[in-house]
Image (tube, rainbow, N blue to C red; front, side, top):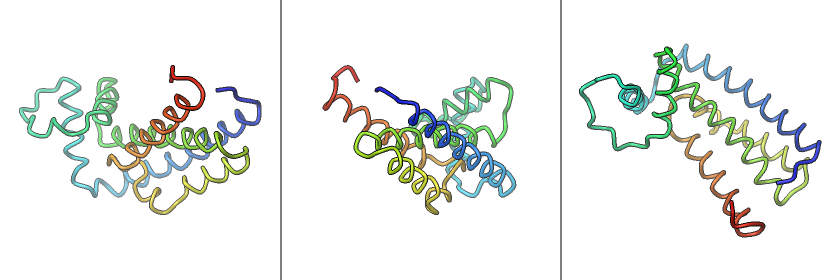
Length: 159
């Protein structure tokens, strides 16, 4: 993965734009409240991963990654619903960077940047951005899995 200076500038710009959107939607979702009942289950699992004895492990079989990341925020002393908004928002930012890198394998800087910004601002993406659900994190992990698979096949199997 060789980056030139224009890639670094565009990645910084994508990170900045994504961070602004995530911060706005964390505030928006905090004011709106949790409107997806699954988020309560993920928060419950995050409490369990943080070491809180909640006497409820019926839903522990669900995807643990977002719950574990949220539990790390809980371990820092911030136990609130916003913690899961923060963890899913960070994963959204990582996904946007991954999409740029994935598009960069095939297209030039401008097309890759434009495609990433279009993806970032799609209405469907914004509807689920930083709301605590697993949709955007799942897309993030898919983007990175495809990116590393292409790198492994085309360039070097160490990826």
